[in-house]
Amino acid sequence: MQRPWPLFLRIFALMLGTVMLVQVLNFAVVLLIPPPMPVIFTANRVAAVARTGHDPGGLLKAELSSGPPRPSDNPRDSRLAASIATDLGLARDKVTVDTERSAMPMFAGALRPPLPMGMGRRQPPPPSFDNALFGPFVVSIEAPNGRWLVIRPARSTIGPWRMRIILWFLVAMAVAAPIAWALARRVAKPIGLFAAAAERLGRDPRTDPLRVSGPPEIAEAASAFNLMQERLNRYVEDRTTLIAAVAHDLRTPLMRLSLRLEKAPDDIRASSEGDIQEMSQRIGSAMAFVRDMTRHVRRQRLDLRSLAESVTDDFADRGETVVLHPGSAMTMEGDAPSLKAVLANLVGNAVKYAGHADVQLRRERGLAIIEVSDTGPGMAPQDLARAFEPFFRAEQSRNRDTGGSGLGLASVRAVARGHGGDATIANRPGGGLVAVVTLPV
Image (tube, rainbow, N blue to C red; front, side, top):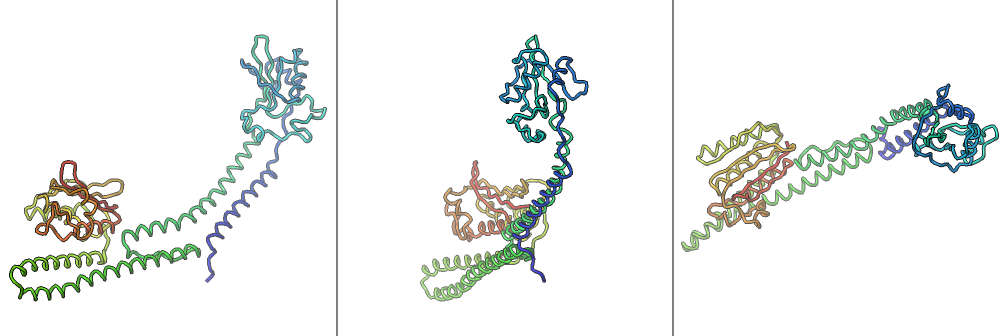
């Protein structure tokens, strides 16, 4: 199998081919559209137009202007002005000629037609062209009423020849644009694939690896990305297995301590049994947390509002005060058991510490937002930053009798981030807490 070209060589060859194609088109312009010879006007013809006010051939136009003309420092313009003034019988200062003026002064030099051979702008022309005007020029003649008669070529600066040049330029752009578009797409597509793969990896570390194909650079980068994904999964699995093994092995010494306490005095046995029971509950919660985080999730289309209704109905059936605000269906792709556990955790916390829960679901900018609020005692500001830490419990409102193991909010944030979202908690201005979970729809 032939090895594909490296991406560097592909881009280099495509750019080189595009430049060569444009140069071929430019060379074709020179061969196929030669510049026309300029229309030459004599000083006598300009003087005749000044006398009658119009040009029989329609190539010159005359109009009155109130402003004085711009003086010219070109010696040839001075000679032409003197020749026209002599023909009209006027004083030299009554006529000015400016052969540099154009409808677009900035581009006048580029748009002027080529001068006949031997006629430089600053060099004195041959005798046969002493009375010749061509290209963009302006002749200003002072009238008796103080106004100025301005005579200039009637044809616009952009004539048919220049229009053909512009049309050829547009054709060249139309030919080169698809090549540039294909090049940009070719370069940007692998970057987009890597961005999508990174986003999928953030949602689900066990997502399918990237397909290794394309130029050698892209294939090498895809292989490195897949290797990184494999190492990350192995790293997480090793740590998770270690935690699960430690939690499981701790049950054996706890069991031995329980047996030994049977022979201890009653006061020591009572206090120690409570500590052992709490440790057993924490170990069980840790193992359940690890089991939930390591199980293979199955993403599917689901209605988040239906999940919320099932959770709130379960709490209402138990006699708890839970309100779900009405709204439209909210479909998304996710793991139904995990999201249901998130809702149950948040609603359960609100009911446990405030006696009621207020649930709202809404959609904003492509995100599904779950808000669970209450009017309970809230949390101290220093505890809010640690609320999602495993085994953390705020002692101000949660104690060993009423509080849980401290893994509920940690599990909520883990599930939310596993779906590409996040979870936050804050004190409400009117009192109580509000937990917000954002999930991409």
